[in-house]
Amino acid sequence: MEDRITDLEVKLAFAEDLLETLNTTVYRQQERIEQLERSVRDLRKLVAEALPNEQRSLRDEIPPHY
Image (cartoon, rainbow, N blue to C red; front, side, top):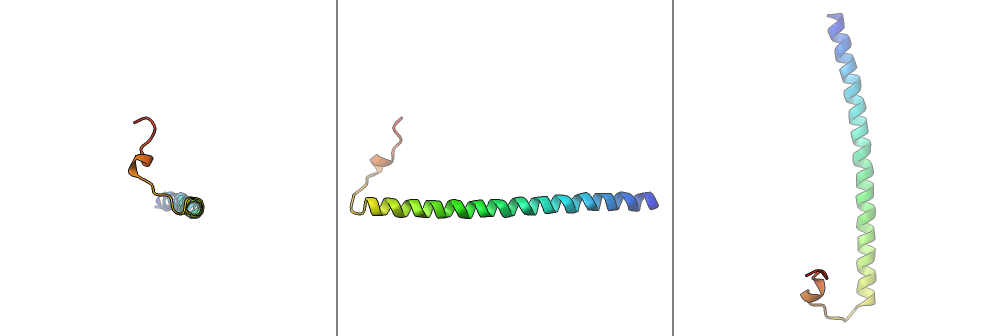
């Protein structure tokens, strides 16, 4: 019985460590996503300011290898 309790405590410790690691990873990913969203928003703003009245067609969006 004592061995089973010890095994459960060890498993719990590993699970808690894994959970903390995953939480840290998710937090860092969310920070990075928010940073990338800000960058995209800033780039869109720059493009809109640089090309305010220019009409764009779907032809302009086709990659060069087509």
